[in-house]
Amino acid sequence: MDLIKFALLAVILAAALVLGVTWFRHRRAVPEARAPRPAEAAVGFVTEFFDTLGIGSFAPTTAAFKLLRMVPDELIPGTLNVGHAAGVVLQSLIFITAVAVSPALLVAMVLAATVGAWFGAGVVSRLSRHAIQLGMGLALLVAGAVFAAKNLGILADGGEALALDGWKFVVATVAALVLGALMTVGIGMYAPTMIVVALLGLHPLAAFPIMMGACALLQCVAGLRFISNARFATGPALGLTLGGVPAVLLAAFVVKQLPLTTLRWLVVGVVTYAALAMLRSFARGEVSQRPAA
Image (tube, rainbow, N blue to C red; front, side):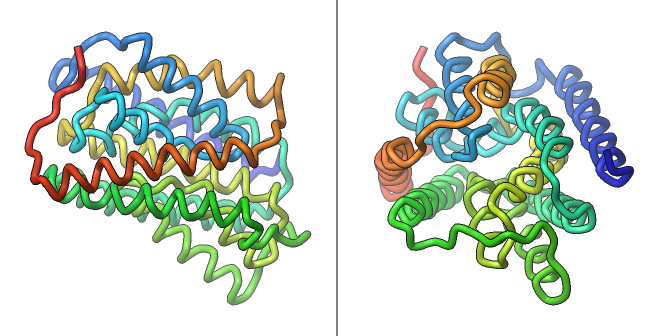
C-alpha cells in the first residue's frame, strides 16, 4: 500500500481513537445519556449498510430520526456525525486500501473536507433549534433532488481517470472544503462528492475512497466539537454505531452490490416527506420535541 495512504489511514484511526475516548469521558454530560434502543441500532444497521454501497447515510438517518421522533431536531446533526463515525472509519479502511486513486487528490480532498467540517461544526453546534430545522429541511430537499437526478440520468456517470491535475484538482479540493462544512448541518457528502468527481472526469469507483476517507476524518473532527458543546444524543448515537459496524462488513464483503435505482426512489420519497415535516416544524416555530419513550 502507498505510504501516503498508509499515513492517511493512521491519521484517521488516531482521530477515531480521540473521538472514542472523548465520547466516553463525556458520556453522562450530554442529552439522552442512556443505553441505545433496538430501533436506533436498526436504523444504524440499515443506513450504514446502504451507505457502504454508495447511497449515503445522513439523509435516511435524518428522515428516520424525524419521522420516528427518536432525536430532538437540534441534536440530529451532532448525533449523525458522532454516531456514524465508526462505520465510515471502517469503510475508509476497506476502500482506501482496495481502490486505486491518486494519493495526492485523496489527501487534498480529505484534508479540505476536514477543515470545512471543523468550522462548520463550530457554527452548527451553536445554532438555535429553529435555524437547524430550516437548515436540515432544506438539506433533505437537496438530497432528494440529487437522488432523483441520479436516477433520471441527469447527472454525469463519470470518466475513466484516477487522478486530477491543474484547475480540476483545485476545483475538487475547494468543493471538498464546502461539502465538509455542509456535512455538519446534515447534507451527506457521498452523493455530492460522486457528482463533483464525475463532472471532473474521475472514474466513479475512485469516488469511494475519497468520500469515505473524507467522511471518516471529518466526522471524527466535527464529532469532537459536537461532544464538547453537548449537542448530540448519546443513546441514539451509540445505536447508530452498534448497528452500523456489522452492516459495513456485511455490505462490503458479503453483498457487495445491489440494484440501487429502486432504493434511491424509495429514499427520495422518505427524505422529501421528512424535509416537509422539518420545514413544517420550522414554520410552526416548535421549540420542543422529545423522542418517543
